[in-house]
Amino acid sequence: LTARETPSAVPTSMLALGALLAASYAPSPRSSPWSPARRVQEPLLAEFDVNAAVTRLNAAVEREDYAAAGRIKAEIEAGRGSSGAAVAPLVWDASALPAWLLARVEDLGFRFPTPVQAGALAARRSAIRDTVLSAPTGSGKTLAFSVRLVVEVAEQLEERASLATAAVSALLEEAPGGLSPTEAMGALSPALLLPGRDESGDATLPARGPPAGLVVAPTASLAEQAARLLHSLVGGYSRESRTYDPGAKDSLFKFGGPKAVRVAALFTAEEGAAAAAAAASGAGPLRDSELLVATPAAVAAAGELLDLSALRIACVDEADACDGAALDSLPPAASRVLVGATLGRAVATAVESGRVAPPVLVDGGGEVRSWAEDDLAPALCPAGIEHRFCVAPESGDQAQAQLQLLALARLLRNDLREWARLGGADHPRPRAVVFTSDAAAAVRVGAALRDSLWGEQAVATRAGEKDGEVGAAAFKSKRGNAGKDDFESVVRAGGASVLVVPRAEGRGLDFPDVTHVYCFNLGLGEGDANEYAHLAGRTGRVGQAGQGIVTSVLNADPDWPVALSALTAIVCVVARDTTGRSLEAVAVPSLEEDEDVRKGLDDLLALTEEREPSE
Image: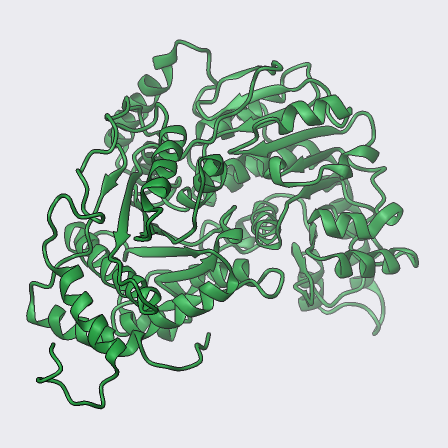
């Protein structure tokens, strides 16, 4: 574009962006900042990807292809045995699980455990009271500690279920003031008690008493994820579609375990204080639940009114980011379980403080051994993830921010198109998570991407202003995305194929079938390997199709080589001994098709429009 060919009403900044857009999408010389040599470091040693293998194994069993399942299981055992260490067998231990729980995990689709899940049960046979689960992101740690917790409290669940059943029977036998059959069924169904919403039945039963199991998670989204999983393990409906089919394997009607189990969640200090006030009068989740999931803020606000006298086990998820003060008041016989992908010195600190006894350690390969003081768990990503970087072209003026958005939009669109083309009709729709530096950036980037990708990708922005907002958005998208691949169906169902969130929400974000992760101008330093591992770990998870790609979009300012050096060091840490791929460079795709040329100009107009972004 030149001044002679363009109406004078077009802003000069838009002319500059148009020229930069064309330049940035044109093939770039290898010496260009955003197109360096393809290999930044030597390839790392490849390691067997157990996450992907377990996903394929469960899928083979689900379709009753037992020949393929046998081959995959042999691959897993061979890959896990490469270190020569003793590992837990990759089967659910029928001697460790109640029959109803074994049936439940299989009905939920977990036909075979991951190594850390098998190891969590094997560790229970140890004479050591406390346990550490240290495994890469996406390896199934949430299910590992959830199953372990339910096993520990199974006896209490069954005792309280017997009392609840007797109370319902008595009410049914009463004269007109008794229960109707519908009310009785509601009273005996499992209940998920989330703040502001009670999913229990209408019937009033005697309070069940204080919790027998406790989970402490650092964020509301992680707490909600754990609460929903526990609810499904004790018979709650787990399917995102919310369809009720009595013949389904995960149906409540097929569940043979204890009735009327209550799972309660507290996310904020205000909710903890409200629960404490209710407990003072003998009511509320602190006096009427079997399983409690809470953040440290909620636990602290509940104070002494959080009765832990009946507690058999407490699990601290993401222990390196979570205040474990709740462990201080546990009964001596109660088990403590610390969980995380980037624990570092968190275990040593807990041991030194006396909150846990020297524990047994379960690693990502399912090895079970006594913990030692030099066991500083490294930050590791799932094996097989491809790590890339892209340096957005530089404009040298106020248009730099818009140019970065243009680069991100173009890269994301091209990546998802290519993934869908290679995957074919048999693979789920590709989905992406974009992490931004903060909430304000998430709103700005999300609005831009929604305009740019409309018609191809359903973009949801969650800036985390409210506790639980990001987790709720991810769960809603899991429900809305179920079985839906085309753009119109996903939007109509309230789902999303691209989720834009602040980097602070990276830990434990549960978004379905993530194939691509984008770290947009995060400014990570060499000391941020733990955070990068959690961001990258949104893809390549057990149960997800495909291994995924993580792309860091860097700003082409004078310090970009320093940022690239830090990113290279981070990838060396998180991919250590897990992948044969190195950090690779990717250029902003060039304009080759007429549709792309038109779309690129549409992007230019949409992403430079002066307006207030909206969610």
